Image (cartoon, rainbow over all chains, first blue to last red):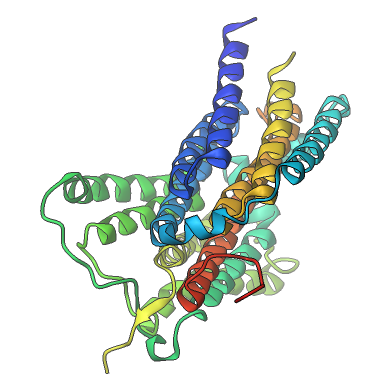
Length: 314
Length: 103
């Protein structure tokens, strides 16, 4: 067995252990901690699958998911004992385990029966990459060839945020999410909230900028920016903005608006929606990416913050 | 065995673990964890497809990678919405049960 394959076997074993711990843990909190470890191991797996852009996104997003789930686990701790009584009987669990094993066997059969040579769009991507002026084919896929997917995803992000906000009480509508900030002066959290944001913000912006030619991207970049804000908010250094604030609304829609504007302009200067005129692809992609980063970072951070609970000041 | 097959078979097992957690856990938050494990296992299968599609000087097919990145963000949005719904349910009823008797 080569060293590379041994490493892969180790990563797969780590993934299975972490996933098992996440699912079988005694408390929801412990389960979420297992899930955090799983997310990190998964990022390693993506690197080994030669998907560095995905690895960066996975690492950043699963950390944010972890924060979200940890917060919920703490708030729901008191409810766990009552719900535990609803655990299905041993026979039902056994039946579920058998059916899940059947799913695994089916998937494994599909994996072993993959067509050889594998179907691939890589030759097309390599041929068309020079026309985009980019060097990173994943960014070209996200913002040029499949730009409509990315555009719709922006809209899904906003729709999700609206759905979360709509769970607010009437009196809190337009107000701020979460409890008022309580500044922590000492301890690891206060130190990290001072130390990490400068590094995280520079790294986040760099990831967005470098994505044209190297692994990176607007998603991991904006997730990192959102994570820095979440960290500062946990330490009580900043307060969540009021969801009715027009500046916040402008930041949220800037990305989709720029995307739609460039998309419709494609009818005038090229041959259709989201088509870029020859030689202009790269500047236009950068022009979309900058407002998109701001919008995605704001939406992700506010999704972690949750619905508004404090009434707006009038 | 190639590394791609190894990750593919690993993902098949991960899908089973995630699905089991999603089906069996009584607590909605634990179901969410299982749901996320299951979803990411499906992404890894897709990543294996992309890796096997390496050609023309590219280390992998970039189109599945772009779709997985989009999928990861959408999975986060749905998780955030589910957490918000769950916390609202808990605030409204004092319970976190999905059972509809006695509520």
